[in-house]
Amino acid sequence: DTLYFIVCHWPSRSSGEQVTLPFRIAAAGLGRSIVDSILAISPDARIILMGDLNDNPVNKSVVKTLGSTPDKEMAVGGTLYNPMTYLYRKGIGSTAWRDSWSLFDQMIVSPSLVHGDLNSYRFYTVRIFNERSLAQSEGEFKGYPNRTFGGGVYLGGYSDHFPVYLFLYKEARF
Image 1 (cartoon, rainbow, N blue to C red):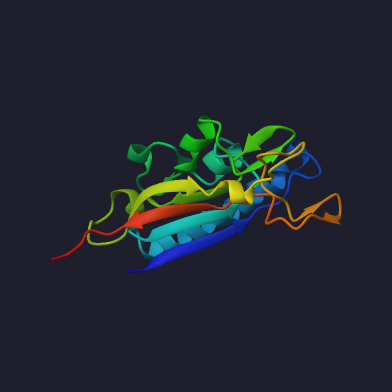
Image 2: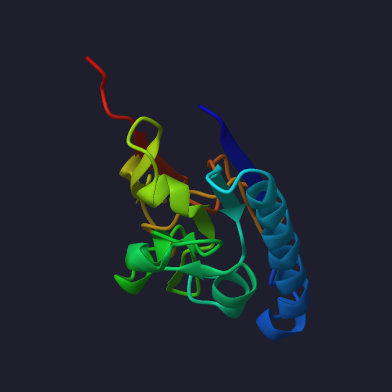
């Protein structure tokens, strides 16, 4: 089986969400172009676009520009399926800022991973690895990801984002 992985790190919001939005829309456009190029050669390609998108699953860059949907049934043709939307709508995030959780870390899949041939890999589910061992255990940021740096000071943590991962399955052949 062939799987295509498009690994992204879209531009930061550090200068402000609206000021930097055009840069994330441009990154989403590039991601869309790569997906379209693969699908033009192989319409049933199994593609996973993943990474720190610095936007949430409901933001314009992800929904409109990248062309994703939270509805499995709508993931057809070139429309990608974004399973992270369900987690986001439940208030689950991979990173926090000012007591607000965001789900910038996403894994978005092509329709063939949702509806494709059972003899190949299929999408099952996504998760956020937010175990206590990766979280700040005390203080003002208790429960947040245990950062490596904060304010230019080394804190010895792992990251300011919790990891995300997905499960794929393949029917057993006997």
